[in-house]
Image 1 (cartoon, rainbow, N blue to C red):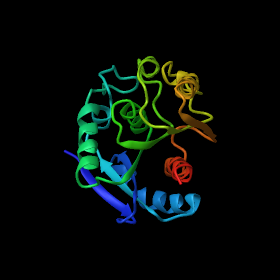
Image 2: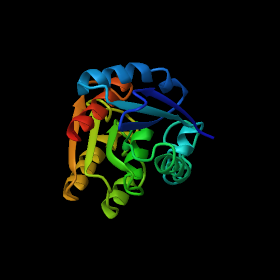
Image 3: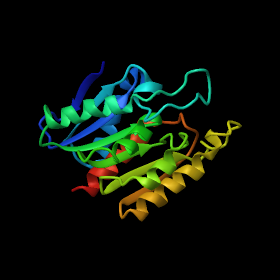
Image 4: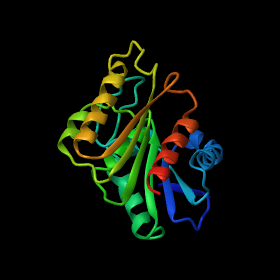
Length: 213
């Protein structure tokens, strides 16, 4: 079950789609305002799609937990189908940019290899450490021509062996996308994974909006 909430200019040609959880939903209005300032325009709407089970609804395949005891599921295909249905139905004709933070950023990158509906991908602090993801990306073509990546400069400074590979994995992701001929930028932010996520997302969406003008 998904709930969708639309912000910004409902009649705009550009539609930003961002999977979120309950906590992130509260910061979307601030994010929208930051995008307006950074992009220098108000000709967009943002559709926040609330997922119920973060580790399941946004994971492309099953994987063991790397912290806590909640394993990752394989619900990304179902979530993507929901987004595809929106793109073919209610929002048909819109120029759609998909973005996400953390595991939602990983989902956005994966979705870009599965669907041609997205004119750009904004992945802020994406979970590219996800087991097997960079190997998957090396073997699957991304179907958009513009991708924004970002990471906090302290995200890999952790004792968790999996998360410690994040820097290496995001650099590899950038190389793989560039090798496919995709215009890809990797931006570094100050701080750890939890610092100003709405601002990091706003940077990504704004950059793509400006690139697509």
